[in-house]
Image (cartoon, rainbow, N blue to C red):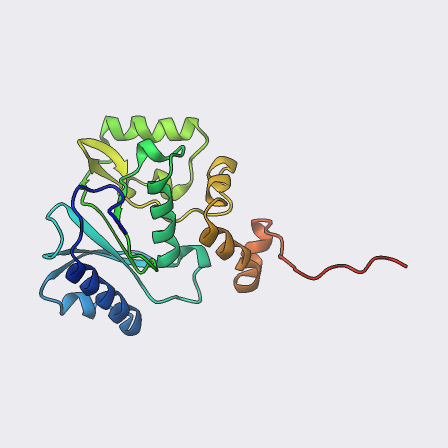
Length: 217
């Protein structure tokens, strides 16, 4: 797959190494894979992903690896779902496009990893950050994850979201409607009634069914 938003293509050996590491992380389920890899530097960990720097990537690029599925977390938090959401939002023009740090590269057949430009840490009191957060708020996009300062960084000298892969079904209608255009998000939303029935009830998620009701005689 060609780069999505990058002038730098990844070599076949680099892609192969990232694919191999992503499988090791899924098998091991811990930070040791990154910590023991001499070419990798750990940056951070979320509910579904590990973020790292790699000597095999350009200096201004990070890689986000999927962690093993935690059955206690909501399906939409899973790392490969978040990677898919960020990839989709980077590939399409949408209401978040002016506010996101785009994905540059993704594998051809899976979402075990993606790359994104590195963004400098931004001060929560930065007036430009507050202004852009207010713009989203006025659009009705005020979910906790979108509005959290720590999910923003400086990209091209302007505040941009660098962590926007989790979209909860209980967010505003515009954002949820956008998410439903992403097949993997839509599928994982539909399995929430099975994995987390209490949340499904709170979020008013209907249980999907393929069974046809019998017509009355």
